[in-house]
View 1: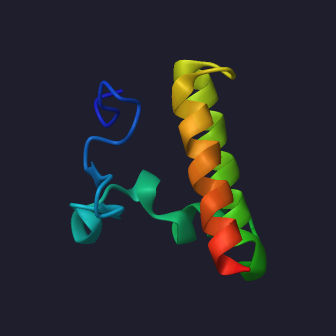
View 2: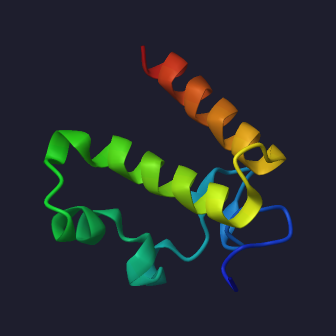
Length: 84
């Protein structure tokens, strides 16, 4: 996977700024709306769908007990806590 860096994150993801450095030119795979349309995901469920896709990708590349997955889960929890 040429998009995945050694740390398990996308090589174009700026972890400090929490943003994609190539957002406007990102590949189709990263365009959640197109993927959600393909699988007929309702608009209100797109975020959860994207999170599930990320989990699945991290598990397949790094394993279900990996440090990368734990970091991802922590980030998701912190974002959900701040949204409440």
